[in-house]
Length: 440
Image (cartoon, rainbow, N blue to C red; front, side, top):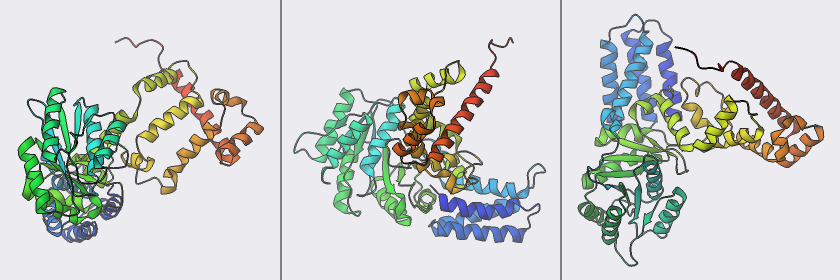
């Protein structure tokens, strides 16, 4: 997400950071480079011009603090303006909730934007927050759209209302709202029909659904890969339905970031969530401060914690903590469990970028996602006894494991050596933990 934009913008801002004194010509030249980077990222021209105008006005009028270098102040100004560009406090407010449940959330968009999958992702996210969602399958035109939502609901552990056979979208929506009330669901997520392009029959149907359901949120699901076209689509839907926000999908692909940085400036509608992967947990809140931090390679610790909370099995984690801090032996079996929990959090290259000051410094070859799969294959090629007692792994056993996992013997040896070092570190760590609570 924002990889190319982040790299180029960081290169421009590095020139500011390296200078002890910044003159007006230096600032103007640097901002011209920022302008080029934003336009290359497909950011709307008018939005870019207004953004740079605000940055330049603040940069030239800013008093230099003694404790902060001029370059750092420029970066701070750019960060603050990026936050404003992404919606500021309005975007941070999140979803609106009904005083009397259920809260109705209508999701709209064109075909191919990932709308049905996003309904399940959002439902999964809300379920973890205790909002007990019911999914309503109101896309009755795309072949197998209802079956797709039912299948996604089954994977996410969420109920799906599909309506009576032969019922139209309005009838399904009406019965879904009644079912949500009867089942005491806190939220009702409505998947609507999409088209290949915006047309009047499509908008008429969505207007009818809006009048019937009176939704508290109308969220456009837009494909970030379409760049500026996503902004035009947002304008069209907003004029017809008065959107409350946008969900950008496929931000983990080759999206240049222009749509994310343009939508609020053009439509005034904040981005509330971004899709960052194919998994049902791959939906992040679009907090402007955190997104601006990612763009400027400052990391996103809150996002990292959220992913950990969603992926980690609490009972398994408690068992592992007891082993790590107590007298139990941390085995390769435990290491495999930990490895799988990390993998559930998302691709390694994404996780590293959420750690402040780390993502931009690690070479790409150190973040090869296949490495974790190779480690998993090696451990799975061991017998249960070998995972519990790796010290019994002699040469012939290591050769068998290498053949079984399809990895070289040297890689097996390297993994075992690293595991031994980890065990030594854990023993030293335990020795530093006080056996009795400290007296106050």
